Length: 252
Ligand SMILES: Nc1ncnc2c1ncn2[C@@H]1O[C@H](COP(=O)(O)OP(=O)(O)OP(=O)(O)O)[C@@H](O)[C@H]1O
Image 1: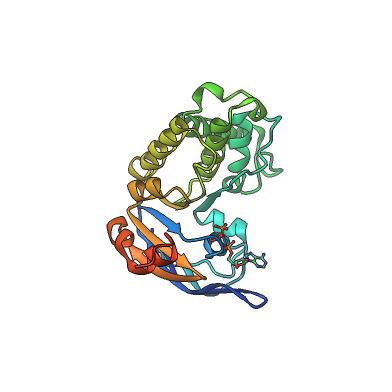
Image 2 (image 1 turned 120 degrees about the vertical axis):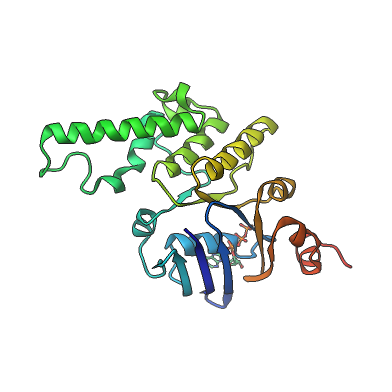
């Protein structure tokens, strides 16, 4: 499903954080949003998630997302892996992934209206799916380990898997490789590629690591002072004079 932003605007007092931002995230693609500090990348993510009310239109397929609260946007298929999110440290990886599925279970696992057997069957089904997602995300060996005992790289994987456990159509990743070692980065890039290729989920990422973005993204939107200054495949964006000027600090 295509995610489309049209003329999205957001003000903080006198600051125009987003100024008529329009771009499309094609189904099953990796799309990067880049730009200098303060360009509006986080604001853009928060707008898509429903955290900020914005002007303009944000659509997933035919559904208008603007004006909807974050949990409804998530339920419609836009999941976000938060940077440094407070994972339940004492809880196991499995517990953390199960929590992410609550919005899929309507009233939750223990609903007064459901018979005990049905509740158990439902929970079993979710456990199987969560185990699959953990395997996909490289967490099969640590399913029963408390998150607090995991390495930094594995905790980032839990954030990723937790977003996948929401069964998204679009996955938003905020600086997915920040602070990672070379090997952790390579593993994350592979996981993002598989998410696109195997699951067919679109991935939108904000990331400062330029070589990584250029090698991974199908398409890149460049923001500067809340506006889109370039949008296209990496080769196009890399050569764009406005991008060189604004982003890379070159003075052609
Ligand atoms: N909650 C807020 N209140 C006031 N101003 C804000 C708020 N959030 C962001 N801004 C301002 O909006 C503009 C865009 O900020 P935003 O955080 O979206 O940029 P960014 O591209 O994510 O930056 P960075 O790369 O530094 O994280 C900046 O001028 C910022 O100071």
